[in-house]
Image 1 (tube, rainbow, N blue to C red):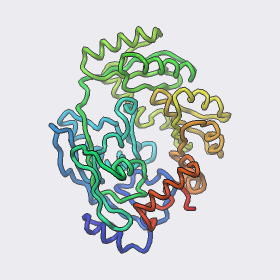
Image 2 (cartoon, one colour):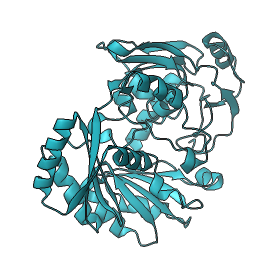
Image 3 (cartoon, one colour):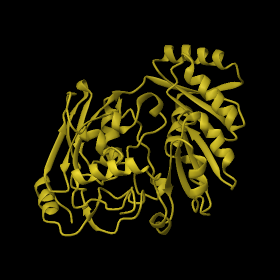
Image 4 (tube, rainbow, N blue to C red):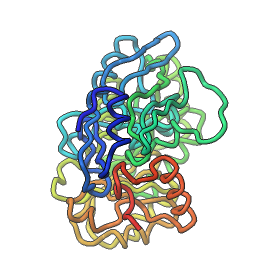
Length: 374
């Protein structure tokens, strides 16, 4: 089914007798548990509705391609500050996906340390709930509201709460330039110690990562004079062997880390996305007794890990004392029999079920995408 406008979408959902698998262009259908439902194609919602560069506001259809959005913003020297990743190589997609998909998966890149995730930049959404009612929440201006903060609530819901037709995002000016300091280190604990010191410094680091065999990377962004001054401040604060990557090299590096480039060559392996307190990352890695490849982002708060399929879920989740581990890429069969997302505590699972019922009482949207039906 492919509704062409909000009215058709509402009628389709209201008259539904079977559940739907929602998608825009399908680049992220491999995330989460497989869905056995009628495909509902939302790709018709793909136009720029309003763009006000002077007000830093962008409204567009949920299926508008990220690449098109970024080209438009680039012409005005602006950006989506949460730096949505392009997982096409990692997941085998044809392009980087849609802006609605980025919100539904709450994606963000290395700049999350400074800029936050997609949910921190969403101002409004429109769409249809599971009863077929049209919902418009938020606006192009920030207002205080009561009840559900719907735009933030749908972020990270993987299409289980509503079918999006449009989104309103806050955009920001692009930094004038950037530079990356590379610091030599070998072990995860040494790397996280340096990353922590960098984040506590006055250098205003916007991204911080560790790639084994290469060292720590620390990104500085802003006007040229400020970047140079903060680089010198950071070098002095760390007092460690380092060198600098200039703007072009820095941009290429962070684009690769954003898109999980260090793990691309592991084509047949499972990919895990593990979020933990940065200080816990070395202990998590030490606790794993099987072969794996990894790198750290978000100053150690995000572990990207690749390993051969070997029933590793229990070992990984047992090593994560705080945080959550997502089976990001695996075979459809494995994703259908394994908890893809971190299992929720009983009380949180009950709350999630109540929110799901409030938006989608008949469980029409992406049933089982995030958790097995009870």
